[in-house]
Length: 259
Length: 259
DNA sequence: CGGGACTTTGAGCTTTCTCAACGATGGTGG
DNA sequence: CCACCATCGTTGAGAAAGCTCAAAGTCCCG
Image 1: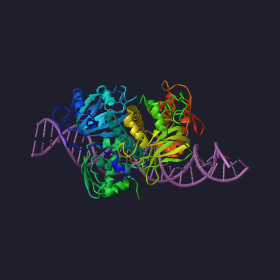
Image 2 (image 1 turned 45 degrees about the vertical axis):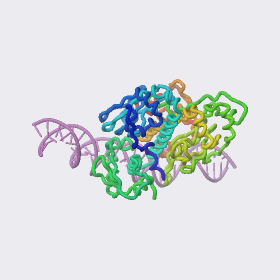
Image 3 (image 1 turned 120 degrees about the vertical axis):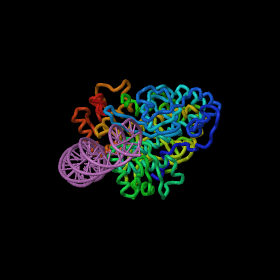
């Protein structure tokens, strides 16, 4: 509703500070992800268990049903999370960007091994920081602040998930697309003071197929809905991966079926 | 997939033990909800801030957008959680039963006041144990075990939410109903050793409208899907609020689109 | 026994999907 | 530098799943 624009926002946006010494200390996501909750001393001990990796487009990070061995902290790029049915139908459950932690949701209690309950693939090139679950989980009990942060993250994702259920269960195609564009703009921190009146440019790293599988429709429907929004003067599409919101407020009214 | 039947299960099922002294000590949900994580001593201090209430059918516990003042621990009955659009469309995001904690998801960081992001109503008569967020939140920092339990709960709900997204975004009406029946059976702890071969009776406290709004279809579609399942010999409908699963395995194959 | 709320069933309609063709775009090699 | 090719996106026409509207059937409760 009124605070739709709050939902998909990543929890941490301050990329400013930079340390300099060890692997973790000069990480771009140092003050973005949960690493912030580990004190510097402990960061040193964690750094030993950490791998920084660069993944090519399409690279599979996580496959549903495989043993959950790692956490992934995304430092650059975008990842799609999804679940699939045996006949190939796919539902993308979220897009994760810099500062997001991957691997929280596994079957069984959080403290036990378990298996991943989703798959994850890189969209475009992705930089991640990977560490074993075994190395982080003990830290949880040691640093309550870390657990608190994980709880905040989980709670936040839960709210976004419920908003998405409303979208998938009850919104029309065009409302879904409008809602997505606004949520994406908000997540990119483009709404510091609420939804603005004027125009606003968005970069969409994902392709139409991803969008379709995220919004529970087909690529043709995505294409037609975007066309419709363009025809109504609500957006422009300068490039395939770029959308200009011409009237964000009107888009919001459409997304929430106000009027 | 294979572990669909794991998802909707409440975390705690052992209703056996009974204490006897104070308000909390003889609570039926004492070893079911998160109270288990508070030591007995602290339970006493919490008991002072607790109200046990009995709610009539249809009673609104929580209204979306209002300040989040309380946590609710459900001790008996079933509650529907939902989000609604201004024009009245409604999406039920979950059904909560005995042992479930309500009020975790609010806007803003978990430690701040914030507002509820969902509404909640009693289905049938519901018994709850209500306490203020203000009284519980300090306990979080004090008892890390409590925070851990909340994290487990949130993680578990997140998995269920993602499973539901797959259902809402990609499954047909009949697959949705089949999936729901299995998830509900599992949640009622009827699958201790996986999905059985033989028949199995379920009580459905909610009406068709609730089912429809949970599964993202209309009541007519629910009715037709149940009729279809009956015609195929997969279920029986002795009463409106009772379903007999005649062939749970076949139902599971249908729910996951296997074959 | 009657009334209201809920459920089922039926008929026609709408939205979205499917299938197919066409168009754009970006990368590659000549 | 351009032409070609593969991939991705758009557009159109017909089909289908599910929705809407309407009527009849059930069930519960007083």
